[in-house]
Image 1: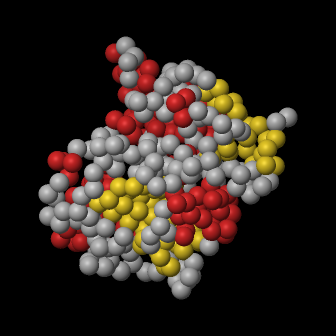
Image 2 (image 1 turned 90 degrees about the horizontal axis):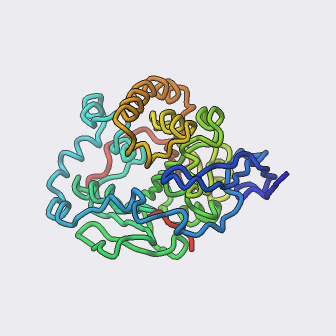
Length: 339
């Protein structure tokens, strides 16, 4: 039986699934091992050529942000954003979706003038929207940034390797980029070094300790072989945090129905790209499956069993007590990130 040393806790990881590439539908197979101790599900081999994992039509490459769409917006919506960042039921209702961006900044007490780093920012679409909302000190880091990315007032881009980047930030974000990294221990330690004492890392990742993985196995859509190198669990994140001087301040299940309808497609041997080109009746069937998946996904989210979550990690230092009560904030792609 294949076994490896877990790249999170150094425990014994044995072969768990042989997953297919089902985003584009090449159906190439990749072995994933699961740690007996921390539960981390990880690609057995890290030697996967980038061109085999990422193509020109990878979704982050299709999210191009034209400078004209975000130029001239800085500060125009800042008063409205500052209002939404405040407390009260009405303000939360005005934030819109059940789990909107404002929740991230309220929980981390991040204000419009605080320094924010987005690790693995892809096209930078999120940062562009944040700049338009009034945030004034934004940095996007991604070695695969488009050559057309240009700095703007309040928004700067860098192609630094994560462990070579310097600076201090109130908030360091990694929105579904951390699972692409080859060395999670070194990566989280590098991110922690960029956070001010009392600041936060916002880590949004798929979870191996989820109903979807246990139910679908190799057909779990968020395995996303071979792009996802590590599918973490709560326990594995706790181990990484202890080594990096961080603590888990809060966890929010932010999963959705894709964990069900996407996995059902893969179980039926339909790649995601193929589903978009299917005959009309097949697309209608898939649409109905998405609607049915919403109720089940909502139940899983309420139970904390969804297949992805947002982990709020606080840097240990002066502020090591439980997460502070919320206050009004101060007003004042995806290639290997570690090279």
